[in-house]
Length: 221
Image (tube, rainbow, N blue to C red; front, side):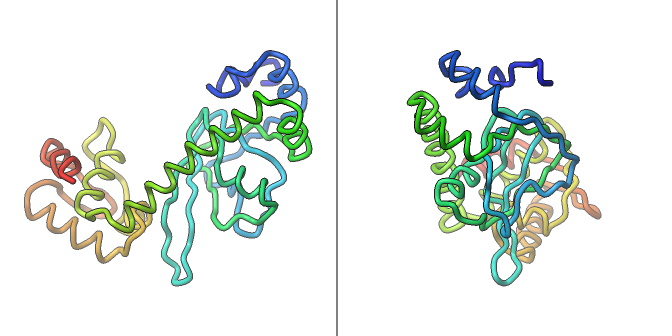
């Protein structure tokens, strides 16, 4: 892995001048973690910037009453906006990042990050452009939770989770966490979908019987 130019993996770093990329290659570290590994948690103050080379990280937050909400996912080729924000503020995370698969991360220590931000305008622009894009995505999550119709959001999420397949392995609670709502709400809407012939439910699994109809609901808002 050390012989590979990992800066080719990320659109932002790939566009940086070669001298800046070489500096990144000299100071960054490569780490491998298994599925289920806690990349960061509420008790941690970040001491490095994370670039996800391979895999997926789920970033979620737990409310005071124990309800989980998935804020966003970091996919391969992306960096984590929460890490950037907490590093800049020198504050602990208020969320948790869990590896949803085996992952490979590029770790840029805070001292090197601070130096590059101060000395390399191109790197500084890259960091804040990435941060801005992710912040907009996060605000969309807040808007959806606050104002979005739950049937529309659920239909959309079912289609995303299924991808090219028709079957999803997920509990009502897991889907509720994805959408930032209560399990009972999800159970009620799923029951309605089943009554309408859109899905078939079994223990821990949901089969999408009518994808075009679900897509019409997802696009109706």
